[in-house]
Figure 1 (tube, rainbow, N blue to C red):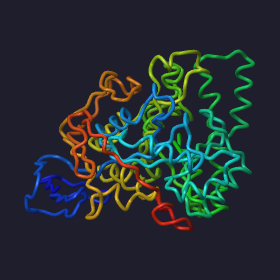
Figure 2 (figure 1 turned 180 degrees about the vertical axis):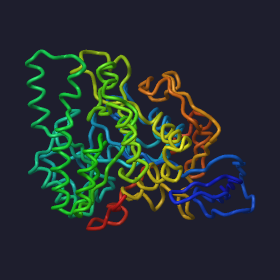
Figure 3 (figure 1 turned 120 degrees about the vertical axis):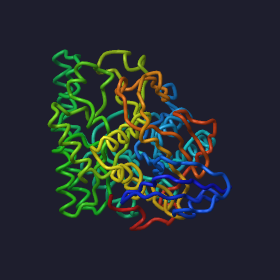
Figure 4 (figure 1 turned 135 degrees about the vertical axis):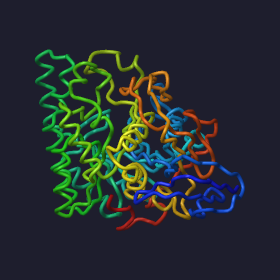
Length: 458
């Protein structure tokens, strides 16, 4: 199939220009002015054309707790909001072995609107599975420094062994950083005091717990030569630890998630389970919000991901604050939030493309095909009306969660259509019926194991 996209403002991470796109057999073949109108012609006059977004931190609970989310619904939300590639890992049914990976790949065939990579979880007693998983096509390895979501935490010795294994194959990992000794001791104190008020969340999952874990992981990454990303960095002080480690030679990046820029610590007290995620929201003032946004716009954070981890309202409200599940829905709102920031000049459109397309694709070894619109890339792109708007309501949420912490907010700009390898997969805010998303093998499967397997830098 051939397609020509005419008259758009094409935005990349380094600039923008008026140009046409020529697409053949699902790939971009040319980006230039006044290209011949060949095949299906899309009139994009007055529109922005951006690469399809790449969200590298997504939980779809599938297979597993699909009453919370499944692949058809979650990737439908992704497609409708401009995301064409995800990297998914579910805590409910984790991948810990090569057989787990193959089972999940078979199960997911025909269940995704978008292309997807898969991540594996590292168990303390299964570190020796890392090389095999990498060669079979895992995108990255998820590690926890504290037991969360039923996933066991890794202590410093386990982390050292796991990071050495990852470094030895040129792999990549994503690390959830909260110190188990601090969170565990705090939980014991709070429960002994009979506390079940909403304020236990920021006390339990404290700034100190996050920063201690970030410092330890940063040191181990530098010592082992591994490549790692710190997941959902919540504050300037935690980010500063990542930046210092990078200055000292660590291959370490800092993932940003919208909830740490747009939600306040006080909301956790007010909303309880509907703001229960970890690390929790840290912002306490307009000044702190402005500082975080400056760091996002100016280069402190490496890339953006949603950390989409939905639960329904019924599930969130079942039990007290201790029993309610962690996590927020995010695929419905991450790109609209970023687009609004760009169109209100809190950051540039170019920075948006870098943060949510180019940088994550490069960091996780997907940039051969994803995150850009250069000739040879997959024809994954988003048509955006910069004059449009999008109001998020619970009714508008596509995720099975059926609600959003952003409900009631209006965002500038609207997604007109989303294309995956030249196929229109969503338009006017709704996904199409097409479930043609494909598995993307990680760098270890494409290039073989050994140093240099994953993309480095952000």
